[in-house]
Image (cartoon, rainbow, N blue to C red; front, top):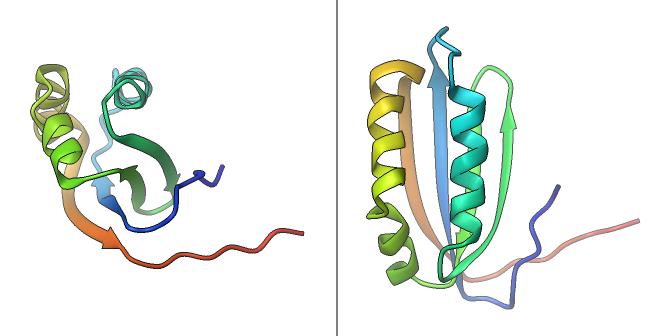
Length: 105
């Protein structure tokens, strides 16, 4: 599903990852984090895909709302578990979206 976003500007957090082979609890935690993100002030939407690498893009109203999400205790715990079990490697990029456009049939 493509996230519905407001008029620009807004922010995107791009999380690109390579997983380990350890699966236990990953899907449940991922679902929980998306549910929790939806409840955060300034959250706009999320898109995610996984093949050889995973890419999750979350959209936010402001840098302050991104910082707020980063400091949510359950999110910090999930990050720690991810580093210990689920991720071989990841990179986070925070971007300001200054222009967007779309196409639909």
